[in-house]
Amino acid sequence: MQQDKKIIITIDGWSSCGKSTLAKELAAALDYVYVDSGAMYRAITLYFLRNHVDWSHDDAVHEALENISLEFVYSPAHKQSEMHLNGENVEYVIRDLVVAEKVSEVAAIAEVRKFAVAQQQRMGKLKGIIMDGRDIGTVVFPEAELKIFMTADNAVRVERRFQELYAKNPNVTLEEVKNNLELRDYIDSHREVSPLRKADDAIVLDNTRLTHREQFQKALKLAQQKIGEQ
Ligand code: DC
Figure (spheres, rainbow, N blue to C red):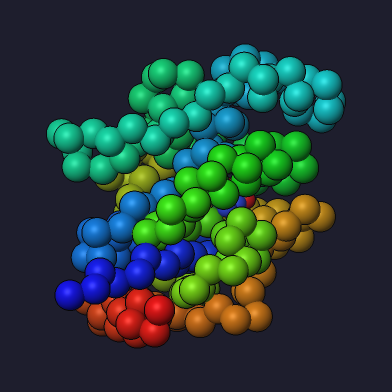
């Protein structure tokens, strides 16, 4: 039997819509590679914060990027790829609110995006990849065979994100999470360089009223159809 041709699947959308959960599940079902592009922007932000990089200066950004090496390394213990920054596993620390508060500012810098996008495009060379983010269907892989744009009501997204962060840090407040989400969505969709927007050929998946399973099955069906068409 002829092997199915591999495709590229992009999942873009607002913060905390469940993009990464869906992307991971789809990747496992299809035996595809999952890439969390947001983790790259978060790791760069972590480096900038730790090294007091003044990212309002192009020279400082340029020099810092020359010292940053990002790599996704598979963790057999956690059964997932984890973000390594200059050899250190930062998968968990990049999820902190301290990083979340600054990442949209850093991700709006043209040189930072150029740096991350070049690596993302290299990862897609062999196809068989699912990448989630904000500009994956519009800029990173405009030729992707399947593009999904995820959305959900604001209140639902805030509550989901709050539950996630609260489990790790009971000091976090709903207000803080709400403000952070709103600010990130605003900056991500209004920045000059590759702002968050739905690609014209993306399929909208609103999961406000979908169960986890319903959402997964819808997306899997879309993916199987596209793979079948190759
Ligand atoms: O998906 P996430 O919440 O981990 O992403 C963190 C930030 O990175 C998000 O606020 C916007 C930015 N981002 C981006 O600009 N482009 C991407 N492809 C992915 C993330």
